[in-house]
Amino acid sequence: MKSYLIIDIGTSSMRGILFDQEGNRLNKLQLKYHPTYHKDGGVEQDANTFYEYCEKICKNASNFARENDIEICALSMTAQRSSLIPVKNGKPTHSTIMWQDTRVNRLVSEYEAYNDFFIKKSGSPLNAVYLGSKISWLKHERPQIYENSEKMLNISSYLIYAMTGQYSMDTTYGSRTNIMNIKTLDWDDDLLKILEIDREKLPKLVAPGEIAGTITKEFAEQTGLVEGTPLISAGGDQQCAAMGEGLLNNDSVSINTGTGGYIIKNIDELPEILSDHLIYNVSSVPGKYILEIDLLACSSVLNWFIDNFYGDINGNYDQINKDIKSCYGKNINVTAIPYPKGKSVGTNDTRIRTAFTNIGLSTTKPDMLYSLMTSLFVEINDGINILRAYGPVSSVIIGGGLTNSKVMNQMQADAYNLTLHKSPVTESTSIGALISVLVNQGVYSTFQEARDNLVHGESQVYTPNANNISYQREFNNRKAQLYDVLKGTKAGFFKETKKTTTF
Image (spheres, helix red, strand yellow):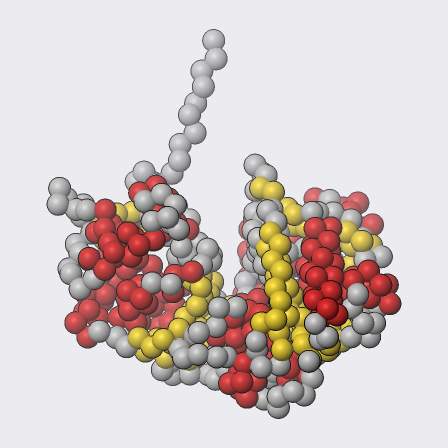
């Protein structure tokens, strides 16, 4: 039997899944890790952990394949997109600077005058999450490490080198660096000059879905994989997740809700003038770009509310779902702002935190929960409205942690006034990477054919409830008015530091 190993590298775990060419899961190993959070805003992870876990996953898969007379024909990799690992001779010279690291914020603010130029060239304003700003920060704040390092890599590039001996990065990741020209798909000399980054310290750029290299003799001996097995870089995790969930055409939108929220739409060509409301990235689907809106604190406030008012979500999921159902279809007067709007949605007032208004003696905990959920979904709809300027949006594909409740899914359909499809895929990122490798290897001729054959089961479909759409719109108007009143004020939204008196 032929099989394909998919390595999916997330923020808190790495998964290795062995699939056959019909999408059946044959074997899985998931290993968890925890980044270290520092008081100065630094978020780091031992880079060696990524290699050690990758090696364990490959050993596990090759042992399973050998014991069951299975051939591993190729590997595919997808990963979180913007964490930095500086290396020399392929070995880390510093801990991984994770995508959440905020030490770079001050540097980004110093280059704010260049934002329009960065948008024009790279498809995004200079972004603290992206790789380019992290590399520049390292050069300024840790110059010895920068000078002693041969290459500046993300996690996937680091592991590709460890497995194949080739320094490469596919252009989906390149479009999350702020230093790749979004139109030429090459490192941009002007952007490198602004951030003072040396081109020779960057890996070569390749297209997603291409063979990044083949397994070396050394890595084969360490893991049991066959030397010469091709390794395909399938693209960044959000690009692969969108593809795995079915975002292959241009008139649908993919919404992935978890700790972070991502709204993605495919386009064939970049507009002549790029907007500061959107992030323009390369798609995992060849020849396409994606328009992306990042809501980085998507459900963090919701998680805070559940933790403090319900306790552990897993132990109280039925009660949470019951409380939301009890409010659905009613005119809940409580209004909430869910989180600071991001740059993509046009407002970045970090002084605004979650706010509830119109709380009376009759207000209940379910009322507040329902209000918070509604505010989250109408906020996402603001992002969908931005994407409508780039072509029709006829349906939405949903995925992520907020899609496990049917009533929440119905609330989304109402808020967006669109038909929703929840894919039966539970490992959408890995399925997206599997689609990429199977098309590359000629098992299927098109991405659509691959997905049609790999995804088993029917999608759940939710259509808007006309009786609830008007409530969603009225709620959004209330939320907008509340934001206008509170923005730019202190109004209790600053955490004051207690002053100590010395005698």
